[in-house]
Image (cartoon, rainbow, N blue to C red; front, top):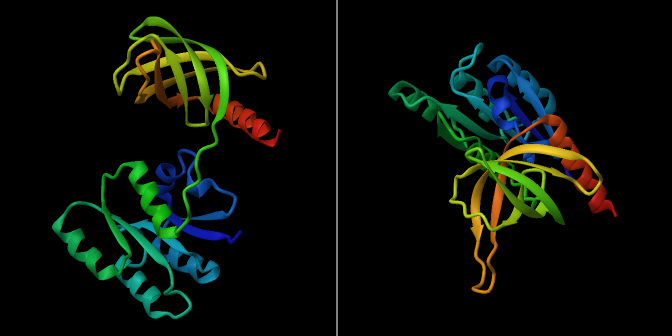
Amino acid sequence: MDLKKVLISDDLRPMLLQQQNVLTRSNIAVFPAASNDEILKIHFLEKVHLIVTRLTMPGLRTDELFSIIRQTPDLQHVSILMLREDTIGQRELSKQCKCNAIMVMPVAPDVLHLKTQELLNVPTRQAYRIVLNVAVDGKFGNKPFMCRMENISASGMLINTEQKFSPGTAISCSFYLPDGTRVSTHGEVVRTIAQNALQTANVYGIKFTDTSFEDKKSIERFIARSMAN
């Protein structure tokens, strides 16, 4: 598996690395940079595949930085994703940077992740989901409800319940994984699974929105052990 190298400006790292995504894979190496001078130095040493940065960075002017990169044979074969403010000055300056893609801030993390993946040309990996039949204690609007979990991944789960929800409904839930680990988390209804006329229960896709680091790791370890069996 080929190693992909990504250089990211320091202020964009939290947004790009805040959840499990393409940049957290074992075949991706991420290099941080606090200035344009560091970007040039790291790229010269590492020959990265993608640079994700802002138009306004300390040090060397950004248009000069990318002029050097595009004119240097050993450095020019790199994809550049630039984020800028929605101003006339930054729009005109960004046109001089010869980027592969320019995005206007603020930008949603999911949209930035997708563009990063596209420029790296890394295929999408489907999230591992483990089939389960686990009782879940839930609450929405301080009202309790019961449901059963049908499957789970590190980012969400599928539940079966007689309770009716609308997309966007926020819920909290508590459950025990089959290995005995207790998990408490918050989630949001992101999709409804159509059922036939004979089924009275409703099936919903839940996206985890506020899971502690410990609970997330517990879920990931459980999935990894289940996939290995």
